[in-house]
Image (cartoon, rainbow, N blue to C red; front, side):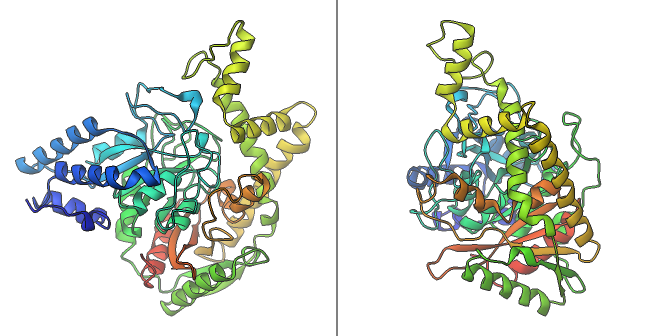
Length: 486
């Protein structure tokens, strides 16, 4: 078996890793070990991993190696090292959702997506840092410290799945899982210069996901290429009897779709996403990507999503309301932390939540409780749900005219650590181009499309109609093929 060197570990693709294992040029065990060496060398500065699962990983790797040696069939991810965002349960492994209130909690079961990855041969290296309960746009809200962007260590990696994006960008794993509630896969993918996929709501099971906002939360992959992300999605997608919201819609051959051209496809450009506030370098990079798609045979059409201006306030009403409900279960009785200052039952509830939740989580619980209260439910929560229906209708009508939509992911490139932590409203506005797709339940992805003059990655957002990940991936692969891949 040829030795794996660190320089190749940083850039090895999913296809290369699997082929090396299946063809006997690499062993899954050696591949995992090399990644652990790189984690030890690099991650202390980046802080993307919260926990390593070495025993489980090496047992899985040895199982894959034994199957290869015996000539048995192996899965699409055979021997591929992956990381898991810490809001997804892994049996017996500390799972905190980035919060002190779950410190030391070890779930008794695997999330469906974790089970599917391992069934396909993936080797789970560990749990990845994230904003507490997936609430944040910078990964600075983790109770265990922020993640740094490996492309520029003074910058945020994006949130809430910053650890998942940073680990792939830094070569600490080949692919990873994140979650997206209002942009938490697409934004960190853009900031870190990797590919991140938001599947259609219901396409991937949420069983085993520690909920933030149940009608918005989605699980999706990070990878170094569109094809690698497509392979991951193909493994993850499909119905799950443990998740009543999972869809039975047919799952396509997503990896094969990335090989198809885009000639004849109609690409929509939403005028509302290119107004004031969009950084000039990001605008130029996306316009260049659109020129490339035009040269590849696509037709470019202006579309309108007129209710976009209401997306951010609508999102923060609905998401905080659902967070208030979901997080009520963390009270010191069943999970994780229990305050020692608990002389009465009421004191235990109050003190546990006060000590266990961070400032951003408390802020969102308060907002959510307010908009759900008897005097304000109709004025805020019900109205937000009505606007959500209008936002969804905007996309449905646009997709009657175009096959995919191309837009910015974020208004700026990665900002500096600490730059926006004192201004929650400015932090929330980082989601201005991502929350509408989340509310509508459509699929989307971020693909690298250039760099700023300072060398910071720029991502382009590709949006597809409900359950049309295939077309979205075709367009994403075409953008990647323009030469913007790092």
